[in-house]
Image 1 (tube, helix red, strand yellow):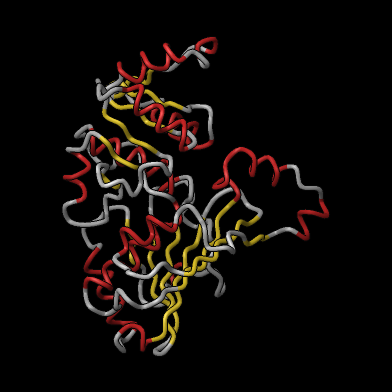
Image 2 (cartoon, one colour; image 1 turned 90 degrees about the vertical axis):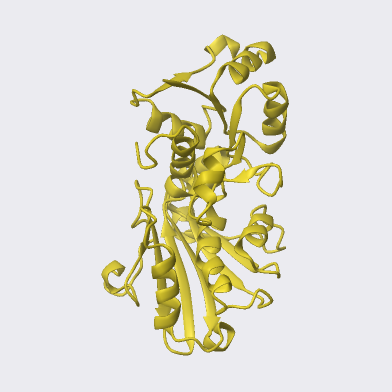
Length: 312
């Protein structure tokens, strides 16, 4: 039985991971007593005692935890701190044919951000197939439920008055192009140009859409069917990736695409939409599921040599 310590267990992602692991008989969750939460020595003890420590912390605290572990423990970090660090394995199992093996053998794994997963998994295969040039400037529009912003944003949205709920249904942000996810989007997608990234947060708890609009001329004049076939073949063996039919009619509800359609699952729906000249690549998934806690459990399973889908 593997021992797992969640450092930051009371945060949004920490709670989600704890709930997913609490009923597992193959994992023993070890945790700090309430009166030990602010004790550096108690935290150090558990960080060094666990087989795997999962860090659900702000970046500075995550860096501190890695130092406290002192190389004694395998680390799965859900913060942004190490996602582009070359000494860490990027924990996106579907990234490449060798990604699972790299995760399985790594001491340090960085759990991916929510938005980047959809962006990377949509663009990387097209760049590798030669349909999309790495030098093509990309645009990425995305929308997430408010849980993606953590405790403060959750409280802000849940405390909206009736008037605020009516007027603040969707809010865009990160207009200065300094979003913390941009470095990993650039690092792992294969694109050579930082994309224009326009995320929005909406007044629902969880679920997200990531969309990349392209002209056919930016895809080497490939047809939508050719683009779809590249994605279909690439993810045919990935259990959590569902490449919808061309046009994704089966996922639409009276012509609308619900961002919550993958909630409470580890599934990611990938879609090729639009027409012959204007193609929209789209990913839909649960920002707390596949986007955060689900991805962490998936990575933890791989690190421990357990069936990847267990608990998912």
